[in-house]
Amino acid sequence: MSKNSSNQGPDKVTNKYPGLSDKKPVKSISVQRPLDTDRKTVTETNLEPIPDDVEAPAAKKKRQKNPARSKTKQSSKEPRAAVKAAKTASDDDIVLELPPSPQHRKAKRRKALWIWAAVIVTILTAGWAILYFSPILAIEDISHEGLDLVAESEAEERTAGLAGTPLPQVTDRKVTELFAENPAVDHVTLRAEPPHGLIVIVHERKPIAMSPSGKQYVVFSDDGTELAQIPAKRAQEFDLPVVASASDVTDQEVFDTITTVLGSLPEDLRDQVRAASGSSIDSIELELSSGKMVMWGNSEQPEKKAQVLKALLGLDETAAEQISEYDVSAPDFPVTR
Image (cartoon, rainbow, N blue to C red):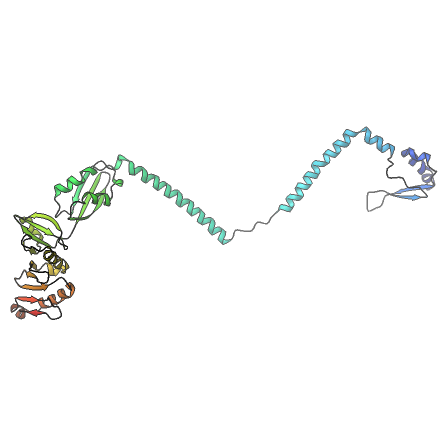
């Protein structure tokens, strides 16, 4: 059987490759298929090598006969190659995701809080803007508190222009400016009573003395500023030290020194002073409600003088009955007479 195969071998090769018929006769050829590969290994025996540029006519004819099929086959391979490449790329792109770090979680939580805060602020701002211009909170009722030196009629006149203004638009500073021309007013605070009520609280400067002027009394602050003029009947309600008539004090500096001394007295001690006078800035005298006199001197060392005077006033009744005058003008060396 091997002999027949050997005899038929050259005829098969000649039929497959007609171009070999013109060449010298061959002795033998065998074709083997190795076990470890699908490629054919050709063992030649006394055969001339076939040039590389010689192509089998049958193969050439086959390729020329079905060019479309070859093109289709080639094009069908391209998608497979692309899919394979994509699959390889996707396999290469696989990344193992680690859980977020505590810093990352904290930053993410902080960002979320900031976003919520911005939303809340935006909502509140929008709501406040609506109320700020809305007539829903327009002022209709205005009342006043803290009026002692300022007349009620004057306060009503100065705040009448606030009617119809939305409550959010009215501020303490704005209303204080309405009383700027009145020296008795220090500042103003407001208390809103929605939807239409407003209470104006007037904070007046503290009066420390008053002086008679005709049928009225002039009220002064500690720096000698005239705060207001009040009727004599109302002057009794204030219970302030009475200074000699301002017209009788020819020297304004002396008058200012008197008011400065009265303003520097502790409140419990000032309540015992009935009147004050002075012929010069170094000879200020105070008259107590008990009728006794105090030689105060100038306006220096007010705290030390006040402490010494309190100590002298605290003497027992037997010693106090013999004293009609306390001299604290030199507080280190007080004198009683």
